[in-house]
Length: 335
Ligand code: FUB
Image (cartoon, protein in one colour):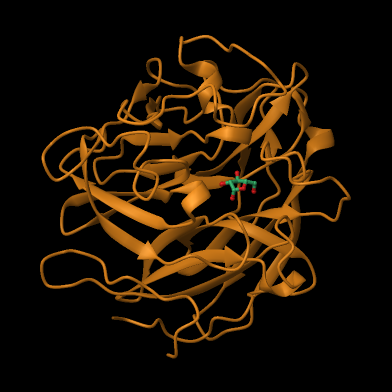
């Protein structure tokens, strides 16, 4: 088993960071993380202790170079429609512009996904006046495919409100119920993440988001009770040898896993684990190729001594087997 490679120390220690989306722009690695803030809220399973309100952009000139913090790229006060909780973001480049995507709760307490635009990968980004029409839930991840078409993947359970959209409309349900208890269970098909193709403006969906199918080795949808493998949150899409790798967090079982398909829209067949559990509750990642090697960016809560909502971003090398499967990484193995 591959044990990872150094460094596995936090990229930065002057602020808490999480949910890293890494991209190569202008020959550097740019990392778009969440910015975790201290707060006294309890972990109620609904994510209310994650009260983030701005984003910083980080970059690495090289894998061994010091990490640069480019400062605040967007603040919630500059997003007309957003009220609270700026969670995991992503960014994309197209048409000479950089696009920054982020979830936040709107004034009705409903998670939506917004876009902001800038001229530099380091920001700053100017937010659009409203959220992306037909967007909902959390954790946007955008793939600009080799043919120039762009796709946004998103969705997160429990605090991310995915269960609330099963009818196609937002249904709040019982706010005091255990998180996730309004979703499917046992042998019922698991909740699906969503994908929407973006228009050429990168600011709107071509059509309503569609569900992504994740299948087991027999071609059956993963079930809700299959908590070691079913989708929970934190999607990422990358291509390797012409195949589409859809990876995500299993949430309450704390794995990063992946499924592979032939189309950016799926279906994807479950293949295995990328990362074993880290210190902290959440696990969230991105995968990027830089100078011929592949890297996994992820976070844990080691910098804060295990405080769930105070996390730190780090990276390690990711390796493929001959057959295209990914070697499972032990986050605290020697390497
Ligand atoms: O950072 C807040 C939330 O925690 C993210 O949106 C989830 O993916 C989880 O990492």
